Image: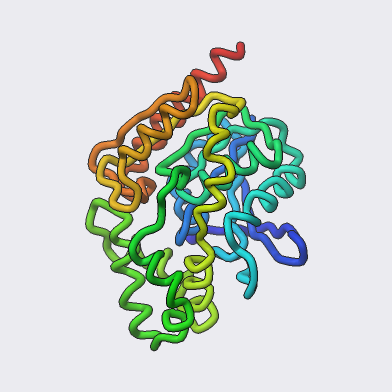
Length: 277
């Protein structure tokens, strides 16, 4: 099945693509970088049995517009706050990965978007962050953006594979890599990396004790992008939060261990439902 984001939301003149599945209490799934909402393609249908599941592509990613401008974390929380208003959501459950985690945290703490619960999956949340590739691109964006396409197309699969613990075949890598192939998309890939700035998590990191909803944190034990110790540190900063380490899973747990995400999210949501009844 080809993953679809059939709906369009206008955000400050940019087209944001989104979709939804199921009926019931609202649940929003927020992707990371350099991924897109396709990372939820196996999980969204499972969670849609009991929820109305919303998913979208961040500005600069997937099927959404990729402007030659700001696509940083500094704009993504404002976009998400606008989307929740557009969807008329009141305290949705949130499942957020990587940059999606940072965006959910910023929208909650800066834009006062309230959640029923928050599941964070290997989020970008604590200083310091940024892989060696990120640091290199930040200093040489133009050189990377203008490199021959065959070199870029060779880098992409290796970079994406490093997010996974299990060896991935073309059927797994292609939907992610194809989103960044072509002259404009290649430039967009390095643009979003060059705009990664720790200041956006620094802005909220000391406010994590202010989080106003139940939080669970899932972390791949084999995450090579953000070490698991960072996850335990985050859990210690959020009062009452729970932490679950997932064996044999890397940073892109959606591909390494989707069944683990489904199990822990469903159990967590059921526990919140029982607590509120």
